[in-house]
Length: 345
Length: 127
Image (cartoon, rainbow over the protein chains, first blue to last red):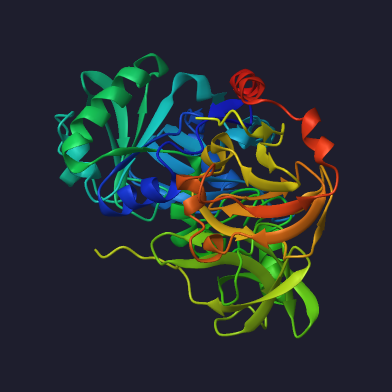
């Protein structure tokens, strides 16, 4: 167990590689109850949500979710979040645990609309069932037809007789579901899901495997790929930035960045030499420091050591020879195409 | 689980003293906390080790950790098994996956380390 922003969190159960492989090949169960939930309600709930996020909320249909950025005026990230449209006047935001209070204060400060913002992390426990057998596992416990929930859609239904928000979302690069349930039901739900998945070889999975899985899929982690000093354009998250949708917090800064050009960009790498380029290690180009590693790890799926780093924009493309300073020794690596892993559909 | 003839550190290393030779490793508790081990970096023969100072590192999927020498001395041999099979450290940390053998410069060093019973109390209390 480790202390993670005040939460006692399991890094691993049976071992990161074992848990990682269970998610890629069968199914894994994560307790991600630490994630925060912020709810926006009221006649102008949609307007407020759209104003504080980068993606286009007007495009969301009821029952649909999308990934988005919560930005400061200067274009850096307050947080990265999932926005769920529950109803025209009700939006449900899933946010990072360590950012939830900051996010809440930020959204409230920007609230010039007829909308109410509530910090409701205490009302929800979240379990993530991920892997090719995730649907078969969860289907045994719910009357909701899970095959009818499209990717990045959700529905309010029941799991094992308890009201649950069932979302076809995840942070592993694998198919799967995330369910939001009352905290008092979480332990019972966990045990039922473990039983339901037993025939498929379900394994409990911790923060360690969550990190290796999301890294292979090149999904950003706040505090690593993104933070207050990084814009979504630099983090290669252009696809969640909808400049044409109208005014939103950070829009001016992003527009300007687009006009003047970026100086740095996120790019993937693979180690060539022996070692693992980890978070914070310096990256060298032609013998001079040029950037830094945001995340690095062995990739259990690929059997290679992979990572992500920031480099000057001209060099942030696949096929560049780089060196990563690993405990004062330069070790060879090469930039590569990402994502490192993409599931077969 | 924890051999009676070993001595243990708070940083989860062990040493087995036999005459003026010491064999050094990390404990079962350490390997369990680290998880899947992927690299082991060890000093070469002839390197001088000082009690309490880093002798090398063990890297797992999630992080790199320094290994501190429980005793002072000169490296006679580092375990050749671990370069190609670092996972042995997860399987048998008190046996085949020892890290280094050294010639002790002050055999009394081990006297200030924990016994197996003390160490088990220590890790029990740490949890």
